[in-house]
Image 1 (tube, rainbow, N blue to C red):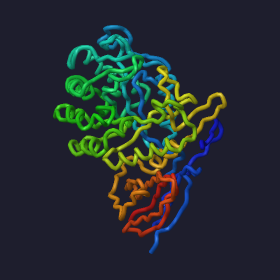
Image 2 (image 1 turned 60 degrees about the vertical axis):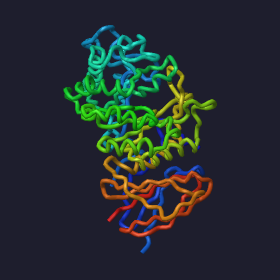
Image 3 (image 1 turned 180 degrees about the vertical axis):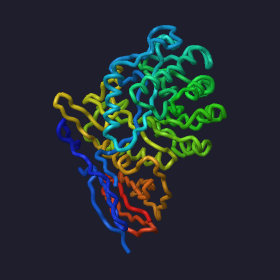
Image 4 (image 1 turned 90 degrees about the vertical axis):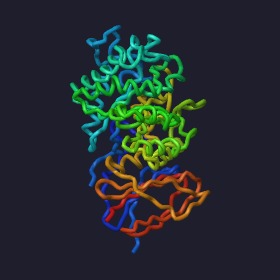
Length: 437
């Protein structure tokens, strides 16, 4: 099931209103057809914003594979002073106006972060923005200095349009670049190369700039953790320049969260972990876009619950919206998205993935803290997935996912408030919200 929207109508959520003390509200979505359906209840013995309140936005720095063409901001060879650096038409006519509209509509401040896919062709070893290649030379030389200053120029130009960035990542998928098809825009870095680039070039350039933009390393699969973090953050100079570690979800099934995410947090507790990319429908033999697929939404919630319980601070979807094919994408790397647009009918479809995301983004604002949650007993054939969070306003949030094909009864006990008995329906996700004391 998908929810159909057009230019004049789209179902939305009412503002979140905290319940009175001693009561709770529950929001539920299910494979059976519920979509963030609200109900109320009592234990025994205001926010004012529509939508699902995304507040974290990742923006490609120049082209990605989901652009309609390959491009950079400075295609003039050997322009080491970046005198010919210019934002593209995509930035000025599309990205920046959309960011202004989103910021104006959002109650919460949007945290923007940018990721580069490729440098200009003349800086790359293969001489092309497409395909496998490294940055020419080595850390500290004119190519690496120019590439670091390219980041600053990007921040400067966006600032002229009143758009500022909370963070940048050092490189999108620096090791996956070695495995991608030849037409993809990439630059490859090893952990040691990224460490040296941060120490000698990018870190100092950001520190000297007027921008209060933070730096995120890795931006690749968690199979590289904790090794990548050890290589970069194990150097005290690099660690001072870096705020956090970005992670992609695509190979999560290969390595447990405890061996990668939790291990990294224990080694470097002062550096945050952030999921910086995820999507469904990649590398599929059948349909990149699967309208109404509950299981793809469920995989989002499973991932978010897993990583939140292993010290991850946030989770970013890849594409906000795509077309019916799963693009546009100039290398035909089509995937699925929470919102699918049918421009021929002037409608868009909100998929289960959209509502699964909403069970978190709507109710867990920035500044919330995960709190301990003790399960009194475990059932191997009916185990629920969950996370509990304390919001900055003192309210408590519990998100519960049931991936089984049968109902699972359970109880919630808050010593400060009381106890409720409830049920997680088959193939459902629920968000409970109540005031603490």
